[in-house]
Image 1: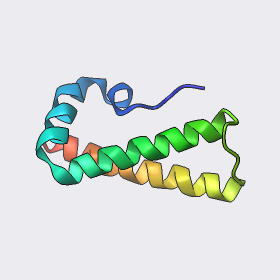
Image 2 (image 1 turned 90 degrees about the vertical axis):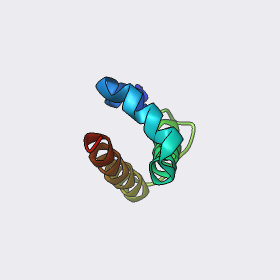
Image 3 (image 1 turned 180 degrees about the vertical axis):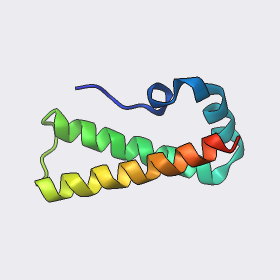
Image 4 (image 1 turned 60 degrees about the vertical axis):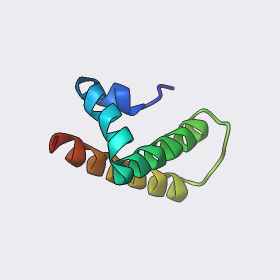
Length: 77
């Protein structure tokens, strides 16, 4: 199972992501929440953690929402 790190999702924006993590508190919070959720989903997909399908759907929807918000911020820089 592949991880979905932001640096892999948006490789062309690595420098912008790094800059925003250092300079933008809201972006940093989104970044941290994204990685927390991504790690939790990875653990579920690999069998380390177990949740029902509904909970998994909620987690993936949250992750997608955060990723969209992150991309919107990245795109404006």
